[in-house]
Image (tube, rainbow, N blue to C red):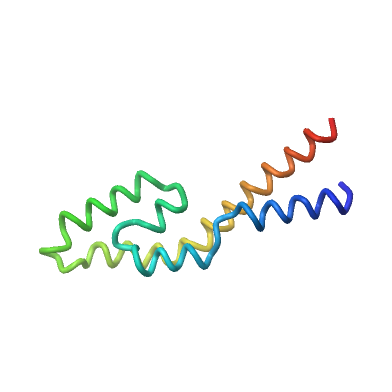
Length: 100
């Protein structure tokens, strides 16, 4: 792989990947509603978090949601890395397809 191809792949990763900043902004402002999970494509668990918040926040003072959201704060870096790797693999396949 030459320098031009490596640069192309890095540009794709930088342009197409989910960012840590947006992830944490969504987590901070919309965490209880699963905004950060929707952003990362984790729709099932995002809907689960949303339903949990709507159904239980009023009588549990949001404790269950708070616990889930705090745990998510530690999971976000891994999700961002997974997305970067997914974009990198896609870009590498693109480069290989252009070669052949």
